[in-house]
Length: 162
Image (tube, rainbow, N blue to C red; front, side, top):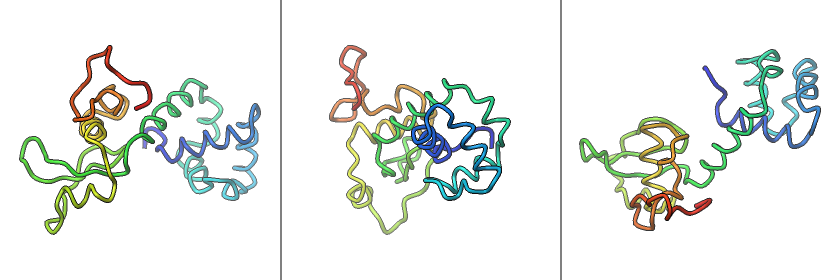
């Protein structure tokens, strides 16, 4: 693992919000005495400690936390999952928010029935197609960059915050 997962970033951001200016010291203390699991998102905080450790935490610059918060805000504008067609094969696939690649849709389900559970808009589906293929930090992964039919907007047509 090269970088924290979105759940780890969420845990860090929530912890920072709760503890304010001295949040890194507070988290280090909880990591040392084993009380981090009593915090909100405790499992993610513990996983962060186990994978990256206190040295990583103290080297973490605010801009990385701000970038993570921006990515999380973008992902929160997308459904957890959606179904669509693979553009190469035409097969039905499932896309998961924040994850690369795709999964095959079970044979006994249709794209429409799957999407009925998550209610994605055409713009959200288009954004998830781009995000799953090219990364979730690219402009095409933002549903605000699509019209109501899922077509891309030209720069002066883009909406703020979807």
